[in-house]
Length: 181
Image (cartoon, rainbow, N blue to C red; front, side, top):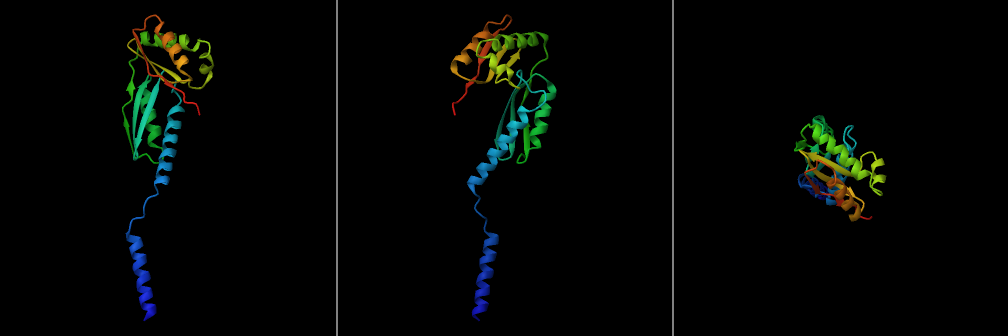
């Protein structure tokens, strides 16, 4: 009789454990999210035609990735969505990337601003990176600087250099300062 009750209790405990949801480990979930975000970032910055004249950003929430930014090539928008949807942990991609208008005027400004910024002493060392950290977004003659500058002085020098380019209507400085680690 004792064996019967012991067996019943063991069966009830096992059945209750199978039915009760296991508390999710919040550290594991946060770690998985961090890995997914890191993988998304890597996929975006290693796109073949992603460069200094493009700006891609994203938001990740519970398997949904929302892409933001501006690109100078229409194919880059679709390529970004394609590579992100293949990342493990991504269930849906919402693509809000803006394709900049194709314009010879804007292309001339892009090159002139690039030269003006990356010829500055101290900023010239940043231009040798595969994708320089200061991105130059030009839309209808208006320039927006996106990305990261090593310090406040470099961000200001980039802004002043871009503002001095002939044909530029306005310059918006959205540069973030690199945090010291």
